[in-house]
Image: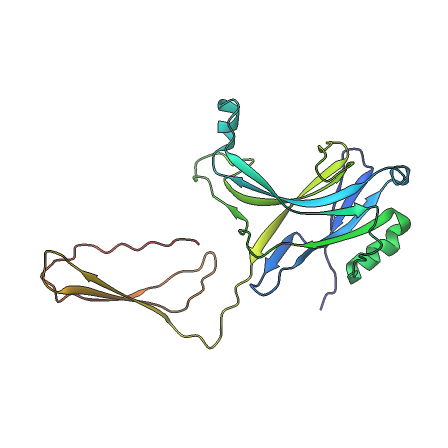
Length: 242
């Protein structure tokens, strides 16, 4: 079995700052959340009078990117900062418990490497990108929810980002749903009463399981019992994401 571990690297425009990220997919299994962790390297000339911060930014885009340019002063997205940590200077009173990957990176970079780690909370949405229509051009920033790890040099966590001395690296916040092997079919019952007709309509829907994955076929067994005096002409099925 292979023991290789992928590490994602990105440099700033000035090449004075670099980030090595251990994983870009952050999983939440509803019990624990994977940490966002890695190592930041700095050019030695910047170490004396600089501070380095790492933060996770969440962007919720609810309108097409082209609308931002068409309507001056109006934007169709919201940004939130989920978590911010100071990478340098190092907080000696709260040392980080290093992983094997971080230890190897620090052995490689020596005094120029600084580790970081923080966790995302449970109560934030998962990464979602709404697909464009089949015949439309791909969007640079599609509608949905995206997360970005930002590493930057500044005097405070709220300092404006310099394009030359900052790094933005996309990450995904995902929910890992593990099905219960002992669970059986998923059943829901519906009873509808008609105000102007006698009797009631009973509908029973049965799914082979409760959890489905992307691209998986959803088969439904439907049982309709209609002893009422009303005629049912159609039944509508809808799949919604929550």
